Length: 249
Ligand code: SAH
Image (cartoon, rainbow, N blue to C red):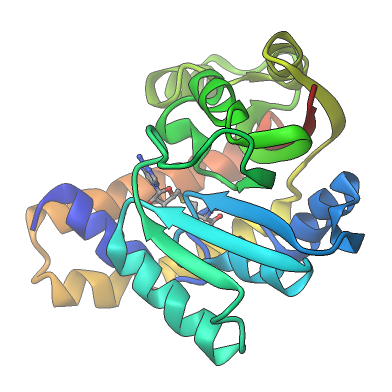
């Protein structure tokens, strides 16, 4: 297996593939005011196995298209949606977020938790704007510095992994420069990282290593994941996922 297949294999049995919580998904949805509207069209971009997708679908009136590059995640999402009686409300689409097959002015709400980094925040907010109807909403979570200064160790780590990491004020400026008005911002709490993401993931490590015969690559993936977890524990005062809710001008 290639590295990316192993990463999908490690993550596909989890309820979510990044930090977050149902409460925070609904808090962001409330900031759009769209939960009260009828018949809205929503897309969840980089949906993974559908943690946020399912919470959203349960709290909107309308239809949701859930997009991911990896069919293994979408298979799990389809099963989960079906079990919850949401099969009709959610369609899955295997596609890259880089060149989505949507017409201009198609959606009332574009959602993306912990995924826009795959093409970069600035590229994502620019490309996706076209698919929004006028006055429609974008809600994205993005890795963000939550203080203005930080230890060099964590700064170096993130600048190597994701150089676009920045403080919220700069992310908000980017939204403003690209045709959006900010409607709300908050950052994810610690439980969304530790209890909802890292702990369930750690619980998968031994089965993941066993089914992949403790291959060198599988061990490397677990080690990198453990590094990310220990850096979070050590430096959680300095970064989190910021949740940005913005309206298309
Ligand atoms: N939103 C989910 C998953 C976040 S992890 C959650 O919060 O749990 C990031 C997701 O982006 C993964 O599911 C990954 O498969 C997907 N992804 C990565 N690159 C992508 C691309 N180019 N296009 C679409 N999805 C992509």
